[in-house]
Image 1 (cartoon, helix red, strand yellow):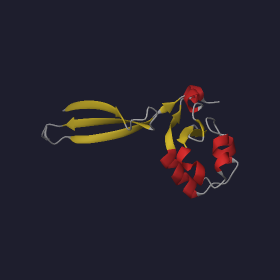
Image 2 (spheres, helix red, strand yellow):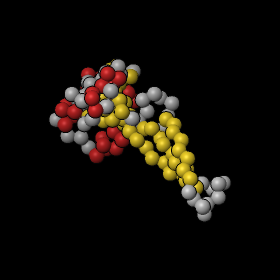
Image 3 (cartoon, rainbow, N blue to C red):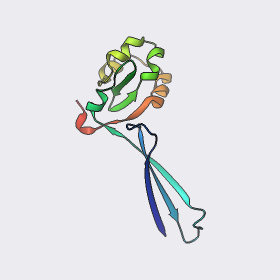
Length: 124
């Protein structure tokens, strides 16, 4: 039984949501030409100082419940208007987000916009 491990970033952006870790496992029954691949994804840890840099309509990230979202592509589609997301760009807007009722569709959209988790030392 032998294990090889390799790592790579999931995408080319330096603050991609996940770090992809792949394990190739070869047992005595499997051929080296037919490995079994197991892939896991770990959330990227992003400091609040990095989130704060993304505070414009052209590059807008927000934090909600310790999760970082790149909302740039969603700004024009936001039902509450463009200004809402830009006003909180680069900040933790958990309180403001939770003060408004959001649909199930919003939860699905957030999954697509997820960049990573706020680094623990960065929480307010």
